[in-house]
Image 1 (tube, rainbow, N blue to C red):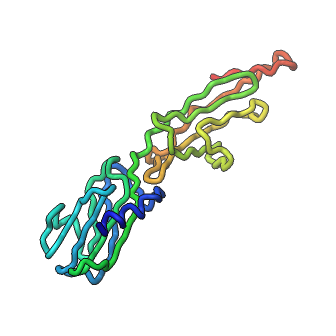
Image 2 (image 1 turned 120 degrees about the vertical axis):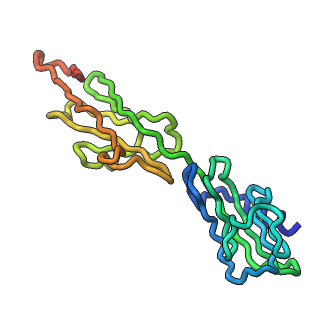
Image 3 (image 1 turned 90 degrees about the vertical axis):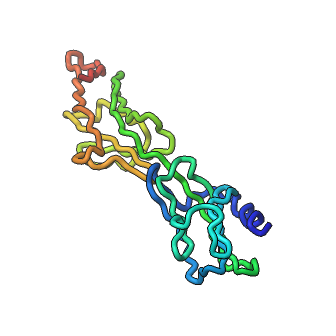
Length: 210
């Protein structure tokens, strides 16, 4: 059918056009100003019909899920709501009036990070620990200054670069959410790392974290 041919022609692209977080309401915009009662309107999600209106009768879906221009309203989306959506408006003679397709990606809100550290000879390793690190963007600050070169989950600091007490923090984000600023609980500050350089032996490079 026309709808099946149209759908398969768009499934090759998996690039996300719209991002949403779990539980959010999303409007998939389909602005067909000429939409009338005589038009056939159909929405599909991964080849499954989620809305169909013919001859001004809603056969699949709910009337309140569609705007006057044909946009689809998704309420409280889930991870399973991700996928390819397609809208087709046809004239009463089955000729195409307008079509739209897009990829919706639903993501969970970022988890709260927990900072940990470990000490080795001449180095302190910081780790921004989260339950599901895949797909997250990490950022680090040192004494409230962003470290643009540090974008991984861990940061290693040479003890030779530490001259005094230093405050570090990490934050995580994805396409739909980010931990808020510190005042709102976004950035979690690691307790001050105190590196005690042993000067008992000038040749010693041993460091201790407390």
